[in-house]
Image (cartoon, rainbow, N blue to C red):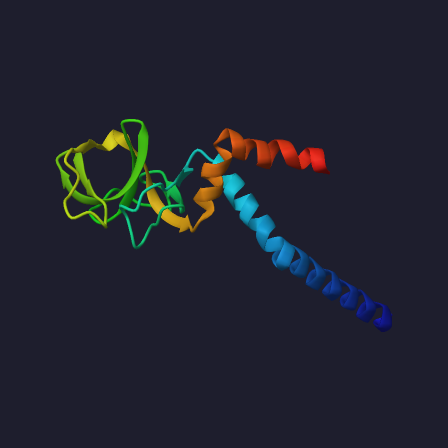
Length: 161
């Protein structure tokens, strides 16, 4: 009886180690990253933005994928001077730091810019508060959003397998 119990313990240990290695090892880290991005993509509380300019260098660079959370969220808190936000400016999404809050309006500034932005933003134009970035992943997002990228990433792979 004791020998059977030991065998079961060994098998269980081996299965746990195999599970950890596969899902958290070489193959698993990519899988977890994809699951995390999928969660951010479908969740109403989080969003992803592709950074196109260097106005927030050196912290946020062109090509970075910025993940934001909603204002007042569990991980983001409320708007405050010094926090980085994403907001709509005409047709573009901009990621800048809050420079000042004047009444119900926000003045922002890019870290690499000498002067704050000219216009004040209403709080309602804030899309989210910066949580973290994934370096260079925005380039893939930018590539796939073009016809050529869509063709090479979405259309070609199924044809080749």
